[in-house]
Length: 317
Length: 219
Image 1 (cartoon, chains in turn green, blue):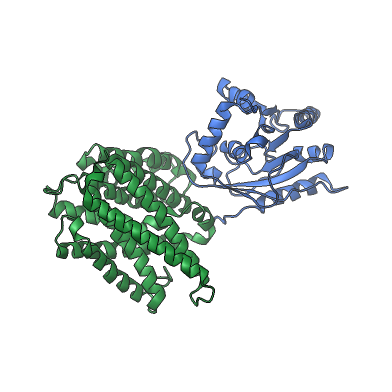
Image 2 (image 1 turned 90 degrees about the horizontal axis):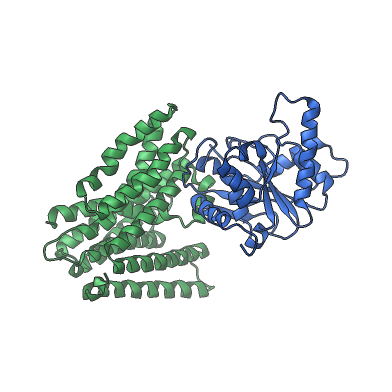
């Protein structure tokens, strides 16, 4: 425990994140004071809300990293639970799904994190894609309601995959054994988090500054090609510049960051599409006041498993 | 115990709030020590606990649920929860026995109103689910007459409508394990019995007051 404190490179990363948050907070406050600003007021409020959320995320993230792998497992377990809760609240379910949902929340999801903590890698890898994939349709069938059977099975399975399985690969980074990098896995998780969140922020900023050509405007009116490419290039540059904290060479680091950014974009679009499909405006009130965890972690959900497997395949023993 | 709230009641309220992640909105009135009857739609066993836990703690000690005797004395556990933990007012449902003669039902109904009036006393508030039974959450069912008779006897008591959303998905009728989805609770503007208003008009108006608080349009 607290071994992380004796890792100077990790401390540098923490320091950099802290400086950045301070800078963002200052910019946000300056913009807020300037009444003659031609930047849209709601954009500034949005920016400040985002910065406030980052403070909370970063503080939690850093505290749990300091506690060690168990801390991060618990943190991500809670995030998975909250995200699944939002998702299931949004998605219409039927009375016949009740017990399957109970199992999903209170058995499958906790087990996913338990086997990860116990480092039973095979079970961790098959828990939701194989075991839950068999269990969920069986359980719904046994409940006896066959209306929309395939859709209902798919909804629950997809929710568990995205909120549980995918996200659990982020803390799984802490359990990788990389030769020459022992005891420094916390940096990998932080690297993933920083690149991913930067990508979100910079896509947004570039989109606001020079965004014109919309990507999939039906799904997400905020997403533009300019924002996407600007975010991709600048977040990849930041990721590349952090190579010294990782087991990667600068070129490898660029490739990893690039992948994280592309997947982060994919996660964002998919969650937007889910919300459009369900008609978020009806359920929006439920989600917004509860923090919108799903909105915060959508990009991480898609980036985490691929990043994990790339690192595991090329770098871990 | 100092404020008269059973520790198990506080514990269950905390658990219910965690499970339902309930967001409370006082849309038509503010919490107050005035004597009130909160009346709400009913879809789940959690309804009462969630509504009760949404009140500030000093009001909780003064607010009692009304529960159906036939159900809540059936097992020792239910009885203990209803009588000792939450201090529920146990009443007989007027329309329960289909075999009952008209007069008998009338008699039961009258004693029910007596019990409820007594439970209000000088300081207490009540939580009432006028549908009389748990529905499936699609629409608010017809109201039984108790609310009308109470309003007639105690015009000084405020009648506060409330709507509980999504509770039927969290713990539906017939299930005993909850699924932790998010829910909403909205308190509306108090209503009053108008002079010369007849029973059916009033009950329909009360039902409308509850169902108009619904915030989520279900597909």
